[in-house]
Amino acid sequence: MKKAGVIGAGVLATLFWGDVLLDFLITAVELLLETIELVVEHLLEAVLALTPYEAQAVTAWLGFGILMLFLLFAFKKLNGFFQRAKTDFPVWWQEQKERVQISWTSVGWQIALTGMLLMLLLLYI
Image (cartoon, rainbow, N blue to C red; front, side, top):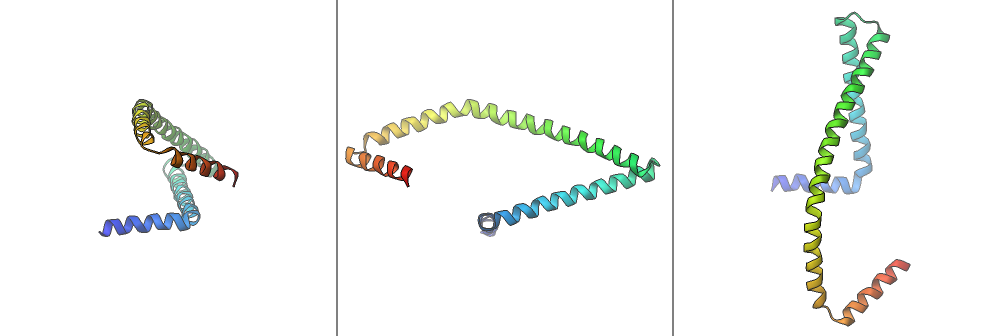
């Protein structure tokens, strides 16, 4: 029950304060990256006796390399996700199509006409 309460609180917070939470998360990530950058620069200056300018350049290239590795990893994961979706989607679509065809046969013409008119009305509102 406690887990469901935490999940429910998280969903409510996201629904009502999503913009604030997103700004908070972006700020937290920026602060974390800035802190890591400063630590790496100071370590490079202390250990390798680099000048601040050289340490900044090395840190920038190191960050670029890490970003490229992260993007490569993310691309592989997304590609796998899309490949699975490409194979699973036709099966899901066929199941949904059959379900709609079965349920459509049980709907009378009066209800179908009313539904279509309501959808057209919603398009013009």
